[in-house]
Image 1 (cartoon, rainbow, N blue to C red):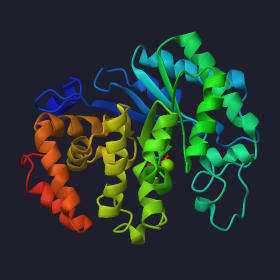
Image 2 (image 1 turned 90 degrees about the horizontal axis):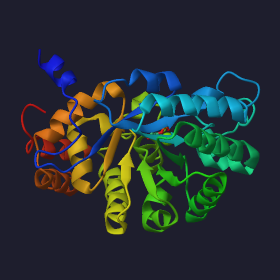
Image 3 (image 1 turned 60 degrees about the horizontal axis):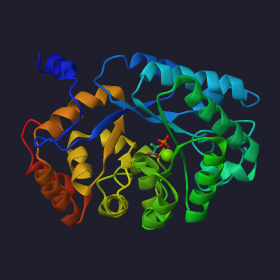
Length: 315
Ligand code: PEP
Ligand code: MG
């Protein structure tokens, strides 16, 4: 009964004192967008477009991509859609762009770095995205994965704007980008923290290696420092900083993220009700105190425990 009531609550994400935090969905296909029919999700914070490129010998045409993006935008109406450009390589290989047999694929030519192999691939995708936004209306934001430098962010922003994209952002999922978040944010309209890869690269821990999951933990103080540094830059510059890694779906971590200044949380749709309830039971000031407790801890386990001691017992 509690779960049913939770799922029926379609109010916008907000803390107990009304500080708004957009609760968004991570999706991989236009069909996923069509399933987000209830208003419980305020939009899409991560559209992993690589799904459209999988299992093919060549990239989908500009027209086919535009049709898919239009369909996703139409399904969302006036709700926001954050489309991520192709993130192939490493754990997402694609025969026509990525190189088989790279020795360290997670550190190789993946994500935005594919522009070194084919600028055309990215330009085509950006044109398809911009034309979908013109066709469907709606609110399209576009971001690049695996940005490591300010120059890469500036280069991507120029390409995206030239293609007609109006809201341009980058993912912060490489520690170098988090450390230089202020300069990165000067180049773009928004950033989104990918805590899965950010933890992988900050902790030098393969995200696919289950036996190292204690290291690959977003509660690790070093990972929290990178998130905090990025959120602070966003707050100072008045630009949105979202989180779209798995950590956003943890109702306890969500309080920390909001306390650090993160403005939206994107997650598997099934996680939204739990995060909504958690936010609704705490004020922004409480979130800040919880975030402070997390940051004062010296280990991931201590950070979790310190936060648990401060939250409403039902979270
Ligand atoms: C991340 O790295 O946190 C992220 C959201 O992107 P992906 O999991 O698709 O690499
Ligand atoms: Mg990633």
